[in-house]
Amino acid sequence: MALEHNYPLQTLNTFGLSAQAEHFARFQSIEELQNLLAQAERPLMILGGGSNILLTQDVKGSVLKNEIGGIHIIEEDDQSALVKVGGGVVWHDFVMWSINKQLGGIENLSLIPGSVGAAPMQNIGAYGSEIKSVFEELEAVHIDSREVKIFNNEDCQFGYRYSIFKGELKGQFVICSVSFRLSKIPQFNTSYGAIEDELKAMGATASLESISQAVIAIRQRKLPNPKDIGNSGSFFKNPTISNAQFESLKSQFPNIVGYPNGQDKTKVAAGWLIEQAGWKGYTHQDAGVHKNQALVLVNYGQAKGQDILKLSQDIQASIQQKFGIALEAEVNII
Ligand code: EPU
Image 1: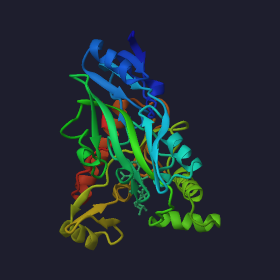
Image 2: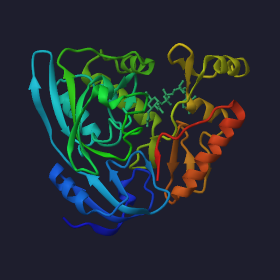
Image 3: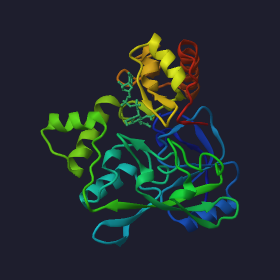
C-alpha cells in the first residue's frame, strides 16, 4: 500500500486549518493498518474525524486515517444488543442507526462530531451521558508489535474526557473497532435540564427519537456547525477545583456555575468563566470565541493554527488572572 507525500489536511480537520502531512495513507481493515505500520515513517499520527485536533504546523512522519467501516449486531437477547462498529464510522451515523433500530443508550450523544474509533479515546460525553456506560470492549492494534489486543471497559480506565489511551498508553495503540451494549428496554436520560425544556417546547414525550431531536436542536442552537465555521467543539475542559476555592469564588462572583464532583471537588463551567472574562464573541482576524458558546474557539476562514493557539493561551492567562483557575485544553494540539 502506497503512502502519499505532502498531503493536504485542510479538509480532514474540522477547524479547517491548512497543514500538510509528510506522508499519508488511509486504511479500511486491520490488515491494511498492519501493513502500513510495517512501512510508515515515524512519528505516526492516527486520524479519525479530525474533530478534536488543532494543527499548528505541518505534520512530520506519517498520518494514517482510519476508514474501517461496518455496523453489525453480533449478539442479542430480549434486553440488549451487542453492536460492533468500525472505528472509521462517523459517530453520528452510528447514533442515527441505533435510533432506527430502536436501540437505546447513545441518543443523548447525537450530533457529536468525530468517528467511532476516537470516541473511547476521551470517553465522549454530553447531556448527562458518556460512552463508558454503553461501552463493552474495543479492538486495537499495538503500534510496535502490530498485535491485536482487546480492551474491556475496566481496562480503558474511563474518566471525564479521559481513557488510558490519553494516559499511560498514549500513542501506543490504534483503536480499530468498538463494541457497544445497547438497550432494547427504554431508559431515557432527561436529567439534563435543557433536554426536558426542549421536549416540552417540542410538545413531545421522551422517546429515542424525540431525545435525539431535542439534543440536535440544542446543539444546533449553541454550537457552530464545522461545515460553516471551523471549530473543534469545546476547546477547554471544564476544570475541577476544591469546594473551598469554589466557595471563595462564589462570594466574589455569586453567579458562578459549578456542579459537585465527588465529595470535596466542584466542576466549574469553563464557558461561564470565559464569558465573564469578556471573551465571548471576541475575534482577532479570523480566530475567535464563538458568540453562543464561549468554550468553543472558531476559525472564520483564514486563521492559522498558531492564531488559535495564541488566542487559547491568552484566554488561559486571563482566566488564571481573574479566577486563579488553570484551564486545560480538551483538543489535542499538534
Ligand atoms: N455557560 C456560560 N457561557 C457560555 C457557555 C456556557 O455561561 O458561553 C454556562 C451555561 O449557561 C451553563 C454552563 O455554562 O450554565 C454549562 O454550559 P453547557 O450546558 O452548554 O455545557 P458546557 O459545560 O459548556 C459541556 C461539554 C460539551 C457538551 C455539553 C452538554 C465539556 C468540555 N463540554 O459543555 O461537550 O456538549 O456539556 O453536555 O465538558 C465537546 O466536548 O466538544 C462538547 C461540546
